Amino acid sequence: MKKSSHRSGMAIWGWPSLVGLLSGVGLVSGLFSDGGVGDVLAGVCLAVPVAVGAWFGWIRRGAAADSR
Amino acid sequence: MHNKTIRIWAWIHKWSSLVCTAFMLLLCITGLPLIFHHEIGHLLGTEVEAPPMPADTPRISLDQVLKIARAQHPDRVVQFVSQPEDSQDLWFVTMTPTPAPTDDFRSVAVDARTGEVLAQPRFDEGFMWVMFKLHVDLFAGLAGKLFLGLMGLLLLVAVVSGVVLYAPFMRKLDFGTVRRDRRPRLKWLDLHNLLGIVTLVWLFVVGATGMINTWADLMIKYWQYDKLSVLLAPYQGQATVPVAERASVQRSLDVALRTEPGMQLSFVAFPGTAFSSPHHTTFFLRGDQPLTSRLLQPVLVDARTAEVTASPRLPWYLTGLLVSQPLHFGDYGGMPMKILWALLDIASIIVLGSGLYLWLRKGRTGGQHKAETPKAPQPAEGIA
Image (cartoon, rainbow over all chains, first blue to last red):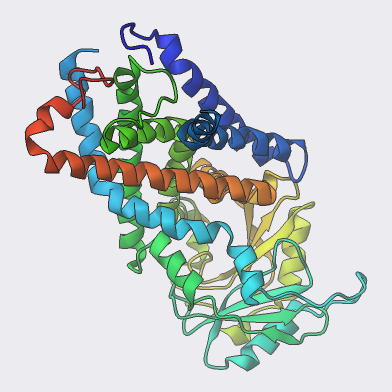
């Protein structure tokens, strides 16, 4: 963990912006589709916040512990 | 950002969340089973389905259906009639003591082909009903709805202020850092920030659309007052049309469907009920495209003459309400979306719970209070 350097705005907001944008695309795309491409896109995009949360929150730590 | 600005946002975040957290936890927890209400209904066997028959089996008239339902509950009046979204083989007839809004209703499911009473499902009891009422109005009617709407507004304030505070907290941390090797409070702070920022857009949208939903009753009332009162002026002073003087409902339905070609019936509101006028049977039609199937087109048919009085376009605020509903329910992308909705809901519960925990821990360690506010935003060491 780096402690000295301050993160730039890009470093802080890069991931959150991407996750937020994909969440938005997912929420909207499903509205225009009934069992079609839009629903698949919605599923993939809305899986991103879940996956990112799970990875950084729990999975990564488990993986790190295993490799030690 | 100046320390003073950060302190102001921290204050806003703390108090907006503290006031609404208990209710938001309730909403997240009761909302979880509601995401799967169809599936749970199937499992519990409370979901009514019409037995399969050839598609061209003739259907009985809607008047016949009403007669059959009234015979089941001669002491009640018909408020609404609807068909499930995915089947025209079934009618649900909602019966109440009077046309006024009430929780005292009976539902009669009638086979649209045979006229057989398939079931009288009770939607007003059991586990799912309790979940539903706690989620929608805390068993307190309009006041409960508006109160939960206010809590929803506070949630939105908490979300926005949380986003503002995210940057100062993350200034010295990589995205997704969870410091587990120190005090548990630090771990939960990091998880709170991580899950809070990844669920941000979803929680904001679900919170905002939920809040809009709490205004539904008021919007409908306003629309009736604003627009329908003009249409109903010629009927002023007339009493609700008695059942015996009403024209055929089937004929009225046919007329309504002819007025709006390409639309299907969603539900019928009978004279004197909250969604109609005392003089009209109102047919709410919907489109057949993914988005238009959510939008309703009311057709007011004179209850005596079966002639169309008007089919007014919905105002923007009711259109907005109807479009916002799927964004709250998460019911527009099949099972994968429902599962993601549930996972995001659980993530939100963790955000709420960890937020509460962080505040409680701060309270207990009293003396450290000042050092724990993000006034010195050095989360790696300064806040701890």
